[in-house]
Amino acid sequence: MAGALSNPEVFRYGIEIYEAYKKTALPSDILEEQRKVKEADLVIFQFPLYWFSVPAILKGWMDRVLCQGFAFDIPGFYDSGFLKGKLALLSLTTGGTAEMYTKTGDSGDFRYFLWPLQHGILHFCGFKVLAPQISFGIDFSSEEERKVIVESWAQRLKSIWKEEPIHCTPPWYFQE
Amino acid sequence: MAGALSNPEVFRYGIEIYEAYKKTALPSDILEEQRKVKEADLVIFQFPLYWFSVPAILKGWMDRVLCQGFAFDIPGFYDSGFLKGKLALLSLTTGGTAEMYTKTGDSGDFRYFLWPLQHGILHFCGFKVLAPQISFGIDFSSEEERKVIVESWAQRLKSIWKEEPIHCTPPWYFQE
Image (tube, rainbow over all chains, first blue to last red; front, side, top):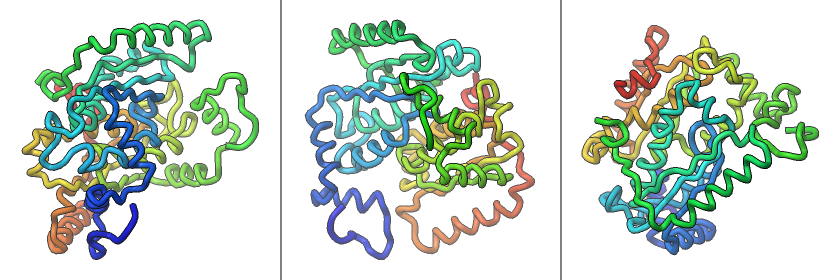
């Protein structure tokens, strides 16, 4: 961000970013990313799953781009988030095969791992979330198998605008 | 990492890092962090909660330092993870007050947000996990209130070696 701190005595990162957003004092790369998000009807996050979440570089994008004032405010989150009316979708590849996740007992819990991203970040900003696209076993697949994976993703994209969002509130996720 | 790729035809990041670890070809900053982890009996991760998770820079530390071969192998994870015998603890500060999390209905779900970190990363590497230290409302607290927060954390640390680890497997977390 450019210019003086809004409170030089107590540095509070979130508040400084919020103030910088309102003064259009964020760096130009962030403004450019925010412009792209604003124009999008559907944002697809394509990433390799690292530690059951996004890689650090994509977390950094979320930390910096989806700032208070732009993506949400307090109040102004979840169904009132500023990106409401838009769709988001996590498209992820995993090193391990689907069977490996089943064996270690994590496959059924995959949605638990995705919940902080889908509910805590995307839904918080107002996005409606489409079902994740999970391409398992990329590290162990042949060229031929990877073509099948890409083809099925391409097929899904043809009718993506007809899809209904998933529910990602806690009761649905955790059968409360 | 230094030296040639183990498979220059198909670049697979995880596998290259795994091979580099075995050949001691990882960068010296990573080796230095791994040395510190190896010496520690208890690793405390102190961070401000960003998007219900660790900030990108700490995610990057986890992505890079806790690599296959060092922290786990397949097989060699969860209770057999290579960091077994060690304790880990998430100590986090939040901008919002505890009341704000309650109001938005997320307070009860706080443990759901921490589960991917505590189970998916720390337990996966073999750590036993101590209860998280959560310091709420740092953005809104007075100097006096912050002193109380630090003092209670200091008090807890005095008897930290007597604490029993929490359970962070899915049935306990989600009452399955």
